Image (cartoon, rainbow, N blue to C red):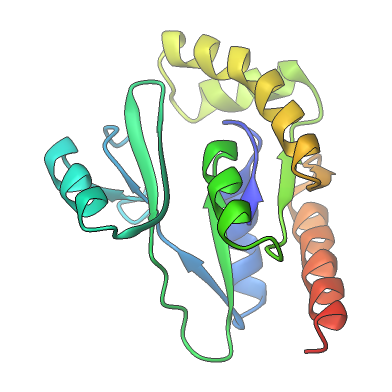
Length: 178
């Protein structure tokens, strides 16, 4: 699982990982938030609150949470055989996954500084009120990542960050005898 507060580069780093390592498979999350200007159509499955809540009622999510007034969730994944599953999720979701699977590997990404995180949020088009809310939650999320025993990685450079995450994945495979 790749987790961390908004603006640390989870999506960008996961995209690099997937491009470089075809044995990895990303589960695409659902959200009820509106698509940001310029955001890729496949960044999320953008759905209505009603669709989301119907899936919750059908027990169709591995994890789900409400964050800043919107729902986010990971459908019960079905990774193709022989591929490692990557989840790009928030800390609330990471807690749920770890509760279900204590062997799950959690990687917590951080921005190099609060200023850089703020700049990234603005560059991606978050509204001002959401920037402030996400920055306020970032400290709580960092504490939660530490509490969960996550591998903490500072995303200074996307390529180097992806390499470091892949080393964690390889070490996990080795420990599991795969």
